[in-house]
Image (cartoon, rainbow, N blue to C red; front, side, top):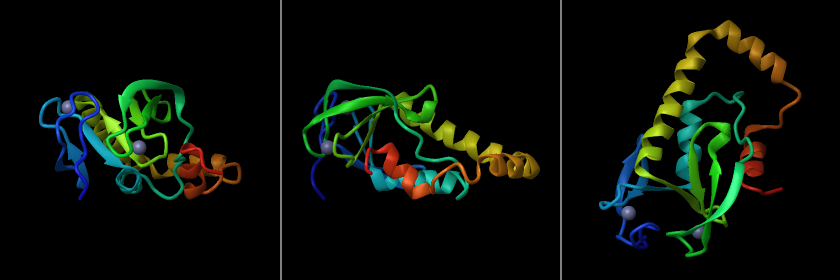
Length: 148
Ligand SMILES: [Zn+2]
Ligand SMILES: [Zn+2]
């Protein structure tokens, strides 16, 4: 495995786990690097097929941090409209989360799972309202990452 360095303090990242997914963690600032695949797996476990996934990145802007993977300048954005900002590799290799962001994304995932199980009927009508107007999950993930 390639040595990744922290975009904040250049510490070599160590292999870690975020909600069961392999990630790379900085021992200094406790930021976490998640690959694209790891984030997708997290979402797959948190959400059902029908859930709206892959919403666009909101409020995108470039930041001074360099991607641990390719060394290019990363882009900061709001994750799916939640009040959670994360940074992304410009070629979509993965995502960088600050310490607090790492915790927040797990909270977001937990809340989503709780909401899903809370009311099956509400879920059904919600899905019915959305069905037909939304492209498939993989299409939406591609969209989120700017692929066509
Ligand atoms: Zn760090
Ligand atoms: Zn990169």
